[in-house]
Amino acid sequence: MGHLGVKQIGLAIICLIVITAVSGCLSATKQPSVYGNETEATEYQGIELTPISNQGNNAIKGTHYIDRDTYRLQIDGLVETPVNLTYDQILEYPSTSKVLDLNCVEGWGFTAKWTGVQVETLFNVTGVNENATTVIFYSADGYSTSHDLDYLLDNNIMVAYKINDVTLPPDRGFPLQLVAEDKYGYKWGKWITHIQITNTGYKGYWETRGYSNKADVGGPAFE
Image 1 (tube, one colour):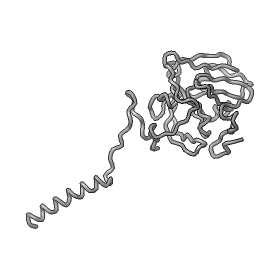
Image 2 (cartoon, helix red, strand yellow):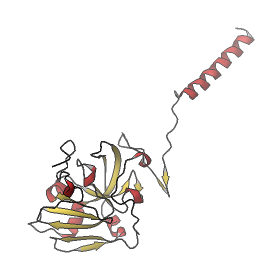
Image 3 (tube, helix red, strand yellow):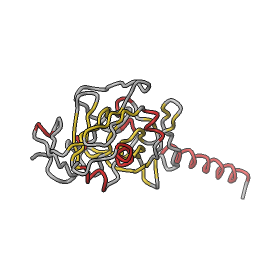
Image 4 (cartoon, one colour):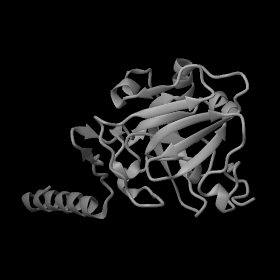
């Protein structure tokens, strides 16, 4: 092979590399977002996660900003020992993580890794009366929703303080968002400040406006 032929082959290889890179056939490394000193997870247990910046979000009164140092989670009602937990106390309890979809009745949804403390863990601290049936979650913006106690315990439902390994940003519900697995998004209360246990039914913000109190994903959105 002549000297010119070698040069032509070399140029062809270089052109092929450039064209391939430009066309996207060589995959670029996906860069995760960084929030403060926390790096957002892009996948967990082989499941691709929706970036926080691409997640849908709803709120009745916009984003609320809660001070970590003065925050208290009140748990009362049909309990043996009412408590007011600081944010740091909540972080001391054993944590759990799950990849779950949040599905909105409006038709959108996203997949995220949620990390927090199981509701049952908190109730082990307070104790729960035998006649308790319903748990009400109140939010800082005046929002509220409820769930059957059995649903929360049987499904290991958590209140999350991290999403995709990032501390919940204010618009995502810092300090706590309820992770209501297999329920529509309006049952996932954000900015939770008060958990009340009762033995009577309760309809929250959207439920009093005609939305289903059961709210099973795939089921009817309205009663």
